[in-house]
Amino acid sequence: MKTPYKNIYAVLKVNRFIVIAVIVCAFLSSTFSVWIAFNTNQKALNSAFAINTDGSIIPLKIVTQKENFKVEALAHLDMFHNYFYNIDASNYERNLEKALWLGNSSVDNLYRQKKADGVYNRLLQYSLVEKVVSIDSKIEENKGSYSFTTTTIFEINRGTIIDKYELVSTGNLIMVDRNFPNNPHGLLITNYFENTLKKLTDEDRKK
Image (cartoon, rainbow, N blue to C red):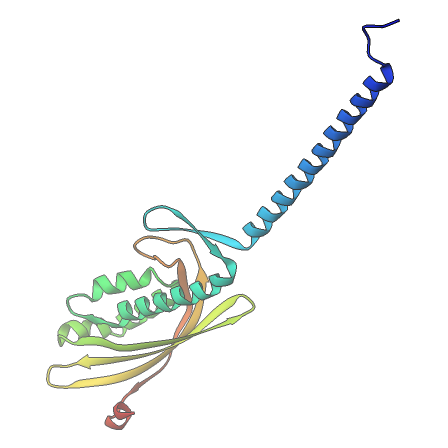
């Protein structure tokens, strides 16, 4: 005698197969999702982001961040020493104002000391021109902190006489928020100190 119902065992067998297939698919899907999340997290830990000039986001590897830091640090030091020492009667106020954005109170204290000593008054009185010839900076890292030593060669034009000087200065660098256009590299000079200043002789200039 035929029945309209299928064999109950066959139905249960199909249902069990479907359930097992769903469980396996869910397990594989969950495993894949966890792997994707882990992989994305690892990439994020090894990446940083910067904003391009057109506003687009650029991924940067942390491995290259130290190289980028050194490039920016050297540019920051070059900018500061140019502003602070490349001055004359017409631009010294503007240049010094820009230089003060690049350092902390140690730079400001040095500026005030020079001002009290009459350095800038003599610049105006005798129409002196102080021109930076070269800037050579060395940067060292020690447990995440950065120090620098910069040798600046500059000339002082007194009209008929041009004297050349060598200044060795030291300090530290810390990272701060970028401030365009005042502090585009996002670095700040701290503990700035003029170590030695010597007048170069003709023999020194030939070296």
